[in-house]
Length: 148
Image 1 (cartoon, one colour):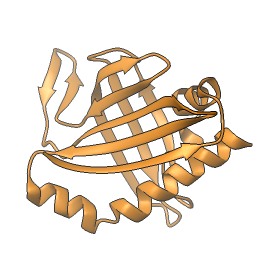
Image 2 (spheres, one colour):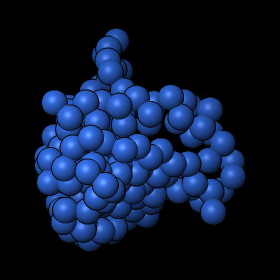
Image 3 (cartoon, helix red, strand yellow):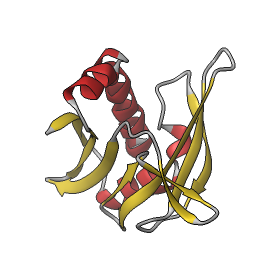
C-alpha cells in the first residue's frame, strides 16, 4: 500500500476532538497561512466533499471529491477519484484517498490522518509536495484548537 500517515496524541476528550474534526475544518485543515473555504460537506457515503484551499498570495486550489464513509464521532474518508455531476458519479483523475480519524487513548484522543495513493509515483509526489511538514502542521493546529 502506498500510504503517508500522521498521528498525534491530543490532550483533549474525544467529543471535543470530534467537534473540531467535523465542524471546524476551516480553522485547521491547511497549514497557516493557507486556509480553506468549505463549499460542501454532505456527511454520508457518496456525499459531495468540496472546498477551496486559499494561499496568502491569492492562490486557489479547488478540491472536489466524495465521501467514502462518514463514521459519526470517529472519522471520515474522502477521495478525489470521483466527483458528483448532475447525473451522478463522474470519474476524475485520482490523487488519493484521505482518512481522518480519532479514538480515545488514555485521558486524551489519538488523531490519525492518512493519504493512500494509487502508485508509488503519486505517493512520492505527495511527499515531495511537503506532506510530512504540511500534515504535521495541520495536526498541530488541530491539537491546539482541541486543547484550548
